[in-house]
Length: 460
Image (cartoon, rainbow, N blue to C red; front, side, top):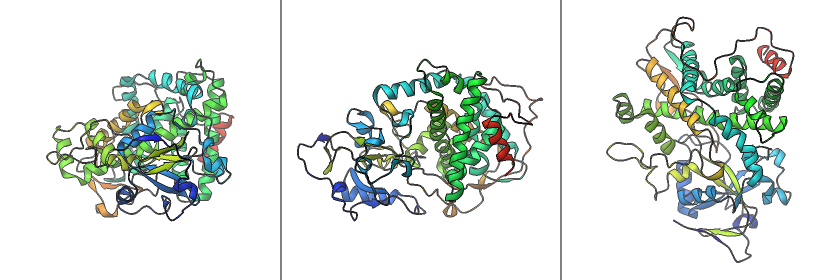
């Protein structure tokens, strides 16, 4: 374990010298086995922190050891989330409007510090804190059952495309008080944004911006018992534009990470016999299984960067004020000094319980971790309960990982199972208490921005 300490010398850091040979690229094709070997090699070569390139010419540091990652997360007085302070931007080498989404500044809580951060975060905290999790469980279960109903009779499915990628965004869209059709549209746009077609992704980003702007405009005119209305009416007094950016942040933080938490957990159950037996025999709860996966197959590999506010040393590296440091969650979980990334030899279960860094730490820690865990646990349970004889439809080595330095998950998870029957029609089954009952679908959407966007999507 090293310490983070002020650097009294006015030396030049490795990044400032511009030694491109020293900076390891994080962009490019993800190796079939992921980046596990890369983290190990970087730690062996550089220690707890290593110089990297996020994209050609965009230099930064990545924190590799658990202690250093946790320390940076917990010390906002030394490390800012305001990427406008990034030295690459200040000195004109990087245009924030054209760089990675993780670093492009937006007027939301993720990129704010101090009092401004509190003002922008408080409506999220209070809004999420007002969710009745018991009632929310009924909402999530109903959505999950509906997704399984769409493929259960086939005996085969892609659990990413047809379930894991859709469940979280439908839940969030329901919390926003919209019919499920808008959620399917938002999920489709998100998938396109993270796809490999750059031209379609650019248009999808614009359409997603229309979704959030239209959502806020509709809720301002027609308030309801939903999360967006609560944020609009919060005493912090966010502007409509700030509310739109806040809703977008909630989706970006809650959609794809939850997708890959569900997908990675199902992959573990389908490929690790010991984990599967322990879970099936009720020796391993779903929540403990999720924590195991968050340690060993984390849905987040790298978290948004922090900007150093003064010169300092981390290990042997000299960091300059304005340098960007990325949180290396996956690398930290494999730090030899912590046991979380090293399963117990007797049980196979990662120890450390919930000390993993998936939900962050400090003032920017995830305010909706309970909701994320709820969605993932119910999603995994529904698949286990309703898909009998569940098995991989391809050899494990053929599963293709997402090409991203930030996310860790699968592009597809094809499975086979014993064909089953859809659940009872909604009118016939007992109605559980729901946080947000499904609004009726609109045969003819309203003539507002959100309605026009839905008509455009239906016409594709």
